[in-house]
Image (cartoon, rainbow, N blue to C red; front, top):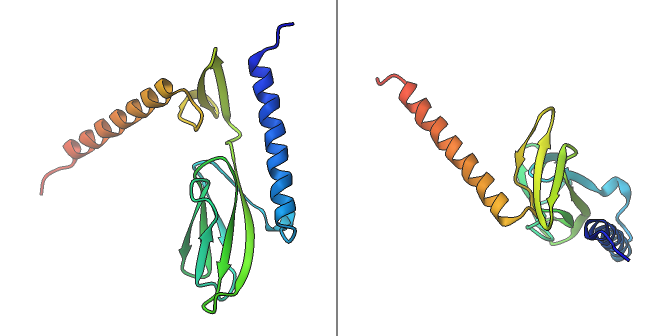
Length: 165
């Protein structure tokens, strides 16, 4: 019996995600769907900071990051796939809120498998290489190097075009 490894990997990821979400839900019964902050990988979402909050704790900073802004605003940035939590604490150390943060893949993300090698593309509206967690090291490094080289050349061209004063 021949089983497609990619098919089995998709099923395994689906089972693991379901189990992880069930464990998170069981471990934190106070969290409801309204308290979940969903953000895409490499994107930011603005949310309201709980009143009187002086400290924000991120459960896993590899998944999400938070920065506090003026006016009771916080910016939550997706750093890696998964679910973590944000805890808001006041000056007295009282927990004001405990919110779940889920970081998901962008909707325009297309993944191509070449055997065990994985490549990601952003296809909105045209497909172009995109580095994403889980890509093969050669593809990831090559795309990152091309992006860095392109950005350096653009900055060099910009400084050459700027008139001296």
